[in-house]
View: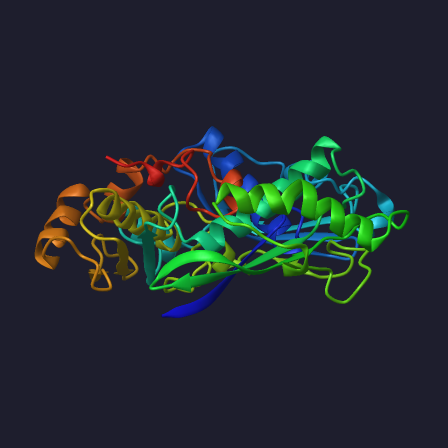
Length: 366
C-alpha cells in the first residue's frame, strides 16, 4: 500500500520561533540563578516591536529587555531595514506567579491539567518520523549557510516542508520538498533556488538515503520574497506545536512547550512521554509507540498513562506497560528530578524541534 505524508519545520528566525526562543531564554536565565524558578512567559513580535508578558517567580531580578534584544541579535536581525531588529522597542508586562497555581506546585503537584503524547518509531536513527527530521535538517542547514556566509544572500526567516512516499508503512522516497526563504534583492530567485538545491537539498536528502530531482523542489511559491520576519508576519510564543513535536504523525496534546518551567506538565509531561516511547522502541518492544499521559492541576500522579503500539508490539502490551512503569515514575516531581529538567537547557529546544536530538536528557536510551 502506497501513501504520502507531509511535515514542516521553520528556520530559527521565523517570527513564531523568535518568540519561542525569547521566552525560553528568559526561562534559562531564571533557572541559571535559581533552579526553583517558576516561569510562564509569552512573547509577541511584530513590525518594529517586541512584547513580553506573563509570570516569573525568581530570587533574582532579570533584565528581560536585555535578554530579548540578545536573542533577536543572535538570530540575525541586525539590520534596521528588515523592519524589525534588535534595537526595536521592547515592552515588558511580567509579574509573579498566581498564589493558586503556586500552591499546587509547592505541594509537588502538576501546574495545570492537560494531556501529553510521546512518540517513537524506527524510521530514523533518532527513532523519529523521517518527514519531520528531514524538514528540521533542511532549515538547520539553511540557517547554518546564512550564519557562516556560505549563502550570504539569505535572510533570517524561512520554512521547509517535506512530503515522503510510504510503502507498507515505511518511507521509500521523496514526493516533493517545499522551501521558502527571503533573500537579498541583488540575486535572482532562480539563483537562490539552484544554490539551495545543490548545497542543501541534495546533501540532506542523501543523508536519509533518498534521491531527488530539481523538479521536485518547490521554492518561494508566490514568487519573489525579500522581506521576511516580524515586519511581514506577527509571531507569538507557542504557535508551532506540530513543528516542535512529531510533524503531525502522532497526537498533539494542545499545550505549547516554550516559556514554561518544568512544573508545567505541558512541557515536562511531553518530555516524559517521549522518553518512555523512545525507550520502548529502542528496547525492541515495539516498532512504533505512542505514550499517552494526562494530569490534573495540583495532583502528583497522572490521571491517564497508556500506550498505543499500532499492532507492532513484540511483547504483550501488559509487559510493555510494566517496562514503562519500571522505567519512569510519571509523577511530576519525579519527572523533573529523573530527567534533570531544572537546568538552563531550554533555549536550544525552541528551534528545530524538541525531540530527536541527543543533547536533551529525555532523549537518553537506558
